[in-house]
Length: 161
Image (cartoon, rainbow, N blue to C red; front, side, top):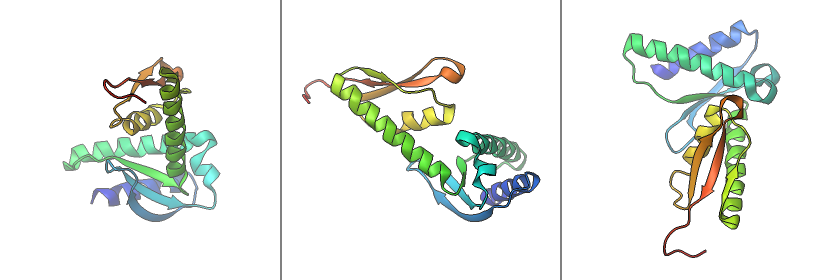
């Protein structure tokens, strides 16, 4: 099964990194069906890294290995996330909370608000978060490490706030 392959790949990478982590469970993280493979460890600093850079790199590597395996075995591609001690879940929730505050600011001032620079995954989370909110639109601007999301208030006809 695909999730078994992902779990084995992650465990093999942990072993090569000389990091000990215990597989906990597979769960749905978001409404759009993103699967999360939860691991726990007593040494999260090794696997999460500064500002989550190690866990982002780990997810990227595992995703690339999985994509190659999907081509070989004709598996259906799926979205997943490797999480260590709940770091990713907390990070996503913090990101959504900050985006919500920025959206409230955009509504209050009836203008656009620029967020801090984000990596592609974080930008995708913010864009997805506002998908079904009629009076808010998002757009990515900038290049490279300075790429960020702009949250825009869009006045709705016939609706007064």
